[in-house]
Length: 357
Image 1: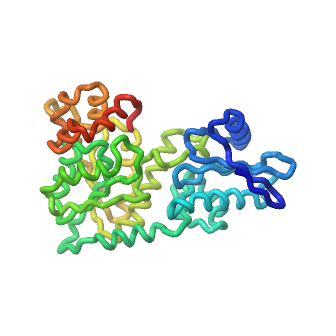
Image 2: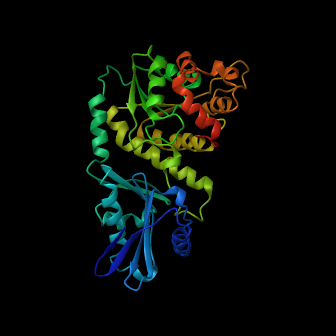
Image 3: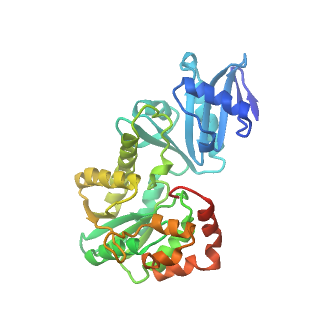
C-alpha cells in the first residue's frame, strides 16, 4: 500500500520480505532501536520525494511501536504523519490505541490527541487515544460495584494459566477475611490458556465463594509481556521490569482503588517468576501510600512443604505428559477440563511450545 502527498510517500512494509525488514532494521539501529519484526503486526515507512527513508512506525495489536524519525526531519510533520497514519489504521478495528514511551516524549503524543494515563519515572509513560478510554473501564467498575456494610474490601489480580489450588487457596483466604473480594482476571491473551477458558475454570473453582466478584481486567491490568521496551536498549533489565510493574500498579491504585473502595490487595509469595516478584515489590512500594494494605500470603504447597504449587509446574507436567504427578495442584474442575476433549488443542500447544506462556 502506498499513499502520495505533496511532501512524503508512505509505504507498508512486507514483513516477509528480508530486504524490507533489513531496510527498517538498519534505519532504526541508527535511532538506537533494535527492530524485531516478530513484535509487530504492521510496519510503515515514510520517504521523502527523493525516496530517502526519513521515518518509520509500527503497531502490535492496539499499541504503537518503533516510532522514529531521522534527526534532520524532526522539525517537520513526519512524526505527526506517522502517528496519525498508524492510529487511523488501528481505529478501523479497535476502539482505542496505546503508546508507551519515555516520559520526556509524552508531550509529542499529547500534541496529537493522546492522553497520558500514568508514568513510572524515568522510563515509562503510557498514553491512549480513541473512542473508548480508561473512563469507560471505570464506568464498568462502577456498574459492577457491590454495596458493603464495612470497609473490609479486598482485591486480587490473577492470570491463572491455568487455575490451580494455589490460586484457590489465596482467593479463599481473602474471602474468609473480608466482606467482599474483587477478583480481577487478566484479559490480555498472552497465555496459552485463552481468557474465556481461564474465566470459566476460575468461575467453576470458586462457585462456593459468594462474596468474590469476578472482574474483567480489560486492557489496563496486564502482565509484563504487554509493555514494549524496545526504546530502552541501554537500560538494565531489572530496572525495566521494576518500572513496568510500577506503571501497572500505579494505574490500579489511581483509577480502580477509589471507585471500588479497595482497602487490601492480596498477593502470593513469588518463588519462580522474576516478573511477578517485581510486581510484588511494586505493590509494597506504591499501594500503602494509596491507603491499600498489601497482604502477602505464603504460596501453598502440595505434600512436601517445598513443593510449591505453580501454574508453570502444571504446564511443564502437561508438556511432559505427566499430568497425574501434579493432580494435587489442581481443583477438580481444572483437572477434569485438562483430561477432556476440550483441552486437546491447548495441550498440543503446550507440548509444541516453549517458554512460560
